[in-house]
Length: 377
Image 1 (tube, rainbow, N blue to C red):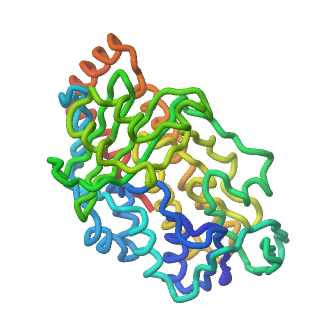
Image 2 (image 1 turned 90 degrees about the vertical axis):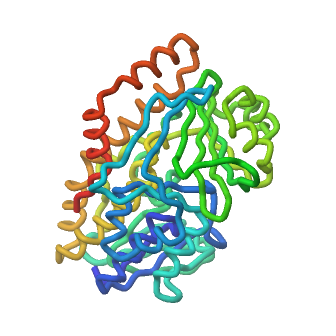
């Protein structure tokens, strides 16, 4: 397994490459984009991902370039806090960082010339007993012992080796952006507002910026919302508490990203012969627990450990499957349910929901935090 090919130069692929290089393997990453993508604008690195990154010395750079927080507030559209997630003191803090900064940080950890851009995989030939060959759109080829598919929710590799995609539309659409804070009054806490017009998230970033996101119930591929501008979002959320209207008034249409929220049912098996799937390519999650990138990071680190501890790739992939399956399925199901609860728009039901969540005992919240944030190799 000395020669490793990774398809996908996002967070999962780069973390896998870093981990495998640090245990002495020859790794090449191929990505179809011309340069690192920054779609998504901001990203939250939760305590479980910080623990995983600490194994290879990356977490200290996140701390240096990220914004630290020890909690996550859920508030009503009028600004009243009805639930607060406090990270237990036994775990690292939670950090937010601009996605482009995280990409640059990860790229700086790799050996020079590890990542090859403008390389779109169009064909895979694999032989369980020998090796595999990757053919790219430009006609070039790459040979390797194993392939790690980290090419996202619309994985080209997955399409080539499985019977279709199990996409599931969540019932709501999402806008994301990064905006200068200017004269806004913000704390370091992450805030998510649940109201009768949808959800709005506020995540402070370093360098006087804020990562924001908005989610509204909608039909899939709704043309009305596809045409929405920041001015439309302002009109939609203008009755929500400050600083939501101010953030949207300062936001730019140019930098705003819009996507329907979908996930995929976790693959029945995370590997096929010499190919193993990680991150969104294997189990794209809805964003309701802030765990999409975090689970991709866990995948990458744990896969590297499985490869290090097993001489044969099938043993390594089987161990990876055993370690990840139950956790991924549980987080995927929980994220889906949280999304349904968070997107309730009926005023009477939102009042009841918020009152119930306000009365959740502290010990239950702590137990849920431990389940989510405890990292196991």
